Length: 150
Image (tube, rainbow, N blue to C red; front, side, top):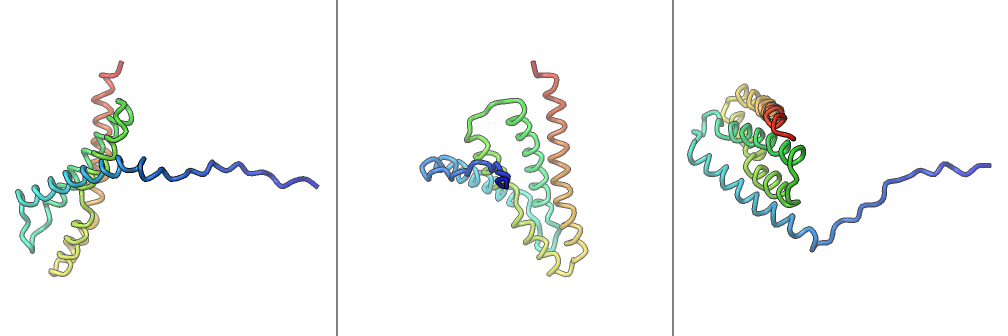
């Protein structure tokens, strides 16, 4: 009789101590505050009437996703950055700037306001436009930086 096959499992990854996580949590928190403040400023600068199409939220999400595309290419493919840059800027600032919650509230407002077709179009257009923005920005950044690499 032979012994059952031994499966090699990946090592168990223990969660980092609270002390080790504190700088990351602080970086995300501060960055999130900066991003949310920038989004709020955009909503004050470019107001949307209650019955109007939520252009501000749409463009904030598209712009934020484009910046995410550029940022991720730069920090993962061309430069070595401090370990807190990604949590601060990527998760914090850009996560606070882009908004899924306002997008969801905007859709509900459109549907509840009798504009179900517009709400459904917005529901589909936002993720499509956001993903397209990431893809185009990342590709453009790669091409732009290709000639600069040694």
